[in-house]
Amino acid sequence: MSHPFSVAVVKDSARPMLGLHGLHTAFRGLPGVEVVALVDSNVEGLDDRLKQVQAKRHYTTLEAMLASESPDIVVLCSRHPGDHLEQIRLASQKGCHLYCEKPISVFLEEADEIASMIETAGVKLAVAHPTRHDLAFRTMKQMLDERAIGTPLRAFGRGKCDHRSGGEDLIVLGTHILDLQVQFLGNPLSVSADIRYQGNLAKPTDRVDLVEPVGPTLGDEVLATFNFSGGVRADFESRKRLKAPEQTEPVMGLSVEGTEGTLSLRFDDTARQPLLIKRMGARADFVEVPLHETRVIPEAEPLEYSLCGEMGVPPAPWFLEANRFAAWDLLRAIEEDRPPQSNLQQARTVVEMIQGIYAAHLARETIDFPLTRREHPLAK
Image 1 (cartoon, one colour):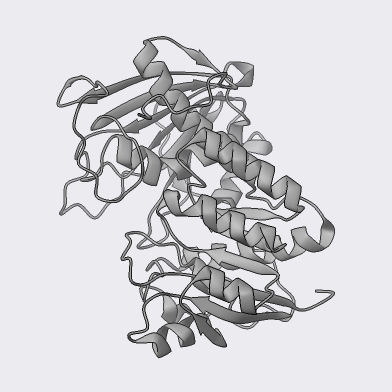
Image 2: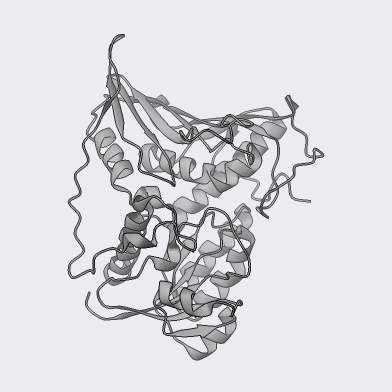
């Protein structure tokens, strides 16, 4: 890197959250990087968290940190999307680049506002869609680009389909699947959707009990079909308790069918799942695709895999690896003045896809993108 970067991490341990991606450790061990601060309102057991982040100083609020520090990058770790708008406003006004947990928002109008903020401030914002930096999903993308399965025809993705099935699964975990569809197939042209609640067509008046505060949601089952250029269609499904509590095999993932075969990969936060390919033919079986890492970060310290499974870091090592490459890409994007590989525009497209699902279901018709109505169909 041409100059050192200072990083501040915002991770409030006083607010327990499910399924954190380990963003707070993403910049550990990268050359030319100093983690100057941890923002955490909880002072109990603070020393362990400072050590994990490798932060030099502690602040209880983002405002206090920004008043005393001038970090180049601020890492926003909250998975509650309602936190992001004001945090991004405060940091971007100080000229800080950002690495932000997904989804960027659940409201398209907010995502539009964030995009305007970032453009005005002239800073970069990377969004934590780790599959864009994971070796297995990157290999899947490369194989699609090289037409390893011929011309893509159809994609099928699922969320975790656990106790958060339907609308919450769509926002919390479907975000990853929709982002993969954008990465693999480009921006969608239109969407149709069917959302159910207790077996019936879901209505805005149906009560949905949320596990986390993820904004307006609908239904306990979601099936959406997106149309992409070239006649490619992609489905997203979240079905009520498709995965039983005792089941260890993940159902979340994405398959892409082409004229000459199928690629399939499950999304798992406990262990890496194999990338599989099936060639065309009635008797063909899925076989595992070998993975070969060629990316190198010069002078980076070895990853500390002992962090996996500790204090907000997923057990699967691939998250640790993907986060490091995401952080490195953001540093390079700043230096090269280019968008990060997982950038705000793509994250806003995912928000638009989710909002489009609700709009299409409520209208009972296919909805075209870009959405002309930017307000959320479920907002009161």
